[in-house]
Image (tube, rainbow, N blue to C red; front, side, top):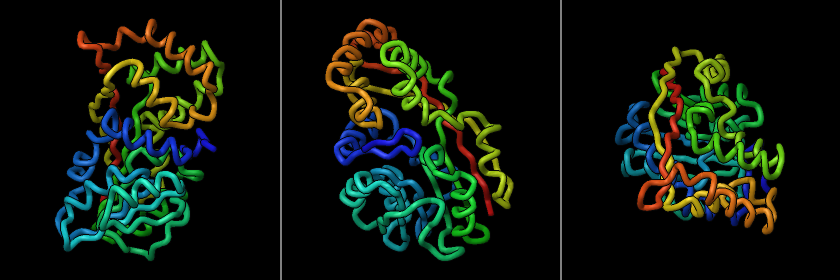
Length: 264
């Protein structure tokens, strides 16, 4: 079963996530995070909360054959996809709060859109700092607050009106530490100076129908909305979210992120 507060999805949802969410939202970020944290050939890189491996496989290309990339995630469905799509990476089941690595094991320790779902964020960040070597870099991406992403703000409002707080709050979960102040609080135990910056991003879906399919079937809402509700949502979204479409029917709207970079 899915769990909105921890971002845990079913195996089927993980496959939809990889096929639809990655091109719509996540493919635009890995190279930017690798650049911000100075990942280079030969580095040892850890991807915490690796999900289906979008950042993991980008790091593999960057570090080359002399480098090492490991990915860790608590979700079996996500890990199965990551193992398939990231050959050459060391993929492990595990939680951020208890990373299965010795101290100072990595040059760069990264987490892309996962910190929001750590069971204990401060403990997870302390673990990330523990396994990065002196002189290494820790980098985290989170979504900026939902009001900066107008398409998702509208989708949350639509879900709340149609189905109540449960589905709406599930869609809100990824935006829960979306201000620089909240993010800095979560990284308060990092010893190095933390730089936080906002990065422009964009959500891109082939159509409103594809957008709804991706957010419901590829995320924790899969277990919260039944087939009849899904059909009702598709019908309502076709009317009420049309303003986010381009003339060709594709969907585009702002989806900015926050990057926190700490050099240990």
